[in-house]
Length: 452
Image (cartoon, rainbow, N blue to C red; front, side, top):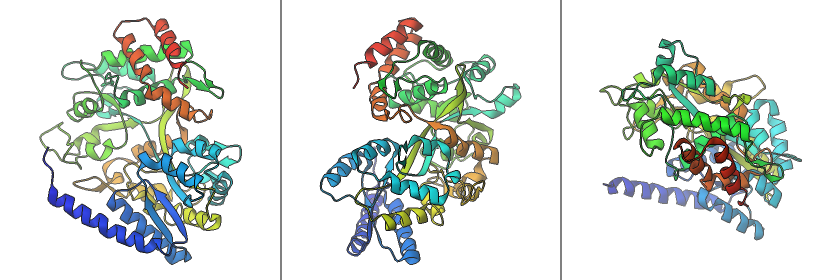
């Protein structure tokens, strides 16, 4: 693989220059802010936000980059040393465990949420971080996994959008016509995290979970058999081979599949804004034809769960136990209010607005976000690329966003269950015909019961 050393040198000089700026700020900072948005251009945006906040409040913020892979160990060590920063930007999986460990101050975070207006936040990320003393940390941004589909083909056949198991199966009957058109591209490569993520989405949609408030509960047999049968159907409507995210995107971009499940990071690529992943549906690698032909679904349901669920990821501002609370709260309030558009602009394609507007019923932040540029080699706002109903669907998924173990306080255990890849293996054994559905559920629960 070739590597652009000139570009690398420029990035190193930019990083070095930014480090000098951050070092100068650190000498006089009033509060310290850890962020996992560590790329130089994103750090530059956050440093500008800190400067804007200082101009408004007189409070100086030291922006400290921390790699997400190091965040857990860094926070534990800083807590033991009594040297936590004031605010940490962190993923969902730390919200409740850090609260239980005493690293976060949920009462301080809850005060911020109430001051900004609980009704201005998407309910999903709030509920995922709820404790007995209020929300563990302030929800900042998030995204939901999506069923991405060829809306033009669905409309031509008079098909309903694929919002449920039943709607997907009905679409397969009409649209699966290999090798020209596959109904779906379902992941079948069991050692890929993508398969586990898609399976959690599909099982959540049918109300099936391996955990409850007491820990491992085992999968409900009836709900899990329905999920097994559904997954077998979409796997059989997929191309042969070991499939993961790459084939899903490639075949959708080539116009050879009607449906995939993917993250929103596909949205700029689908509109021809990234040269490394161009649409190939026609001869123009910068075409917007595929984006115009596509639709998305975030909330997806199974036969045993009519309300359905959206698989969501969310990020939070946590106020720590060592924080200067008033100044930390002021910084978060600024970042979530007059500075919120700048917060989302750090990476708008993956930072959907959890706060809709400055007052309940307002959509000013959503409207501003939809006008932010996305893309890599070319840039354009999502609102220019996709219709308003699609923007509404993208953002609306956060209202009902869920993950296993969050509401039950068992996210850590649920994560271990997913990472074991046992669910991937057993589902694969079922749709390969090695076990029947009842035996698959039993095998699944027997293997998962040993995970602690």
